[in-house]
Length: 413
Image (tube, rainbow, N blue to C red; front, side, top):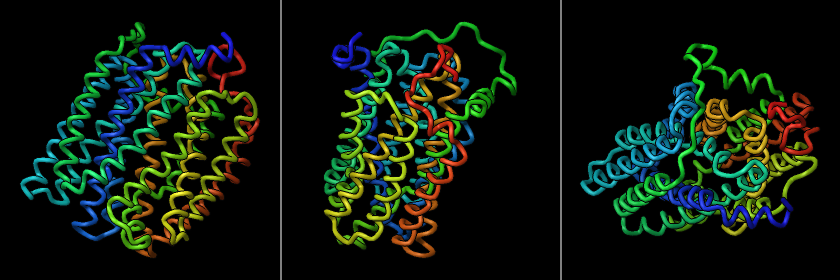
């Protein structure tokens, strides 16, 4: 297949079109809900630590359920797992809407509901990643990963903006809209063709439960890529503090918060669209390190900005550089892992990469409560750059990676 024909085939691939649309809808609703919760919590308590706790309560299920999630994904219909996750999130959104409408929704109730949402997402995220290799042929997978990222980033742009605008009518309206969109996502995933799960199911024991961890540990390139993302995002996460920047530093309102939340996705979307049409065929490892360093530098610019325009621009670069790293990492993992292991490996990957954002929000909120938001963000940007330099020394094989595909046909180099 030629390079020119590949993108056209991806666009005309109906199962991928369903997958792409489903991911747009569910991610849009999630980030609409996130903006509403962030503003509502901070308006309710005025405590930066509570913004960090929003991330922490969603982090807990990722860690506690990682080995269980991987087993379920590799043993069950991945489409059914994704559908159940959408239904659970729709119910949670309805509970948030009901509590807000009655005026009975308190801080603790929000955290309890977020714990359930975090549990659903602990299953949903690795399931969607494990679904993708079965949706498109291997030749199109790198471009499909990038195109899937455009779905995610399109939703991250639209979701916060919609959430911020609809919040003018109250949080109840936002949560009710989210419930409807999650329900639509459950219908879309049901329309996707079913892909057979591996027929040979190994018995559940400790070795099988932790097979995903063992596989990643035995492949330094995958370990380096995943662990770099973990530490850099844990240090460099700024989204949890955006309500503080919007209200107290940049002196704007919910619309400004929605704009800031959308900015990283603008950069990521532009970069993902480019990556969906231009394959990374050389120096992929060095490109990953360079983009991660740019991620850290953009955080430093944002930390000291007092202009909404400059802050938006810094966050655009933040999102674009992160998109390069994400596409390379996801392609490395998905193309170098056998299908029968993919659910367990993606569950571990999601545990680390997903929890890094939640832990990062908690770290940012905790440091902001002690030393202020600006100091918290600046420490994160500087720390991200230090991590890049350290990982280049600890994982030199990652820097030498040229393409995402394995050098041998075993998919596990």
